[in-house]
Image 1 (cartoon, rainbow, N blue to C red):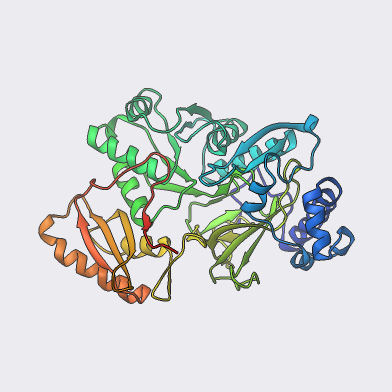
Image 2 (image 1 turned 120 degrees about the vertical axis):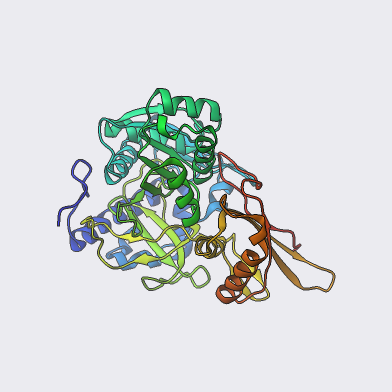
Length: 433
């Protein structure tokens, strides 16, 4: 079976060679952070572990964890292990609370990131003749420059439009004859609905959409495909702390995300016990980089949740896979003793005929001291309001069966809930803790 990766192949071939490669990268990283970063050295010494203790991949479990608070507390240059003379760029997270998380990049880091992103474009079947309209934010955020650098490394034509501005987006789809759009899921939905509203689908040449930075439900992906008239939508994971987007991609078979294990180690751990979970079980994604120079990661807790997929993929790529991002451990809502993840709502709605992809989930504590959940969900464009009662009952029944909690369901007209070119907020928990 031939691998889909020819121009940006894995650094090694075969599971054993990959493990050896990862061990060498882990040992290099541990030695580097211990020798060059006071923060890491203090963490390791407090845990009683030293570079010479890392003799196998299993020894990674001896290393301490870090998280977003560590990056904020060590502001402005957390985890830095390179001299400032070697650092060529910084990027930052959105910084919704407290100090921003600043990450440093050397030229090697930038080159490695572009190589990983080029691999994503190759996995998606992009060609040198494609025209890639990049509809994500530029600046401190990693998305825009990540998509662009990867596109240029691959060799396709980059069209750096940025987010929003539907007038310009549609003009460029027509005038530039863009064949690929890169955006958040919310932006792609917004653009698809605008193309449909303007009746310009027969004037564009779009073939593929690559989504990043936000979970996309099956229902949302179906709507994007239908309104844009395309067959291929790809999901690209990534976070600022781990270079940025471009650290993996689902192949054309759509069976999970191939992740670039020759650049980082991914552990899937129980978020409460911090012990590994079995393949197929949901756990938190924990990252350790293998060659990152500016701000290496050692067991970074991302809070993102997914599961490892152990079976081989039909595409022939030998790199391992994980499922799509299913939610975040810190976005989980506990309702009457039951853990509720936004990803579960997505999956349930995707399976209900007549339910749209857009919803808002409200959780509140009322005067009786009990918690209540209300789901407001759009009906699809072809559904009449006369079917709202039956649709609401169907959704409520499936929610009860799947989540084991009761939920009130309100049906909203198609297109009535807020859209965003960035990430759409869908869960509103008003309880005071």
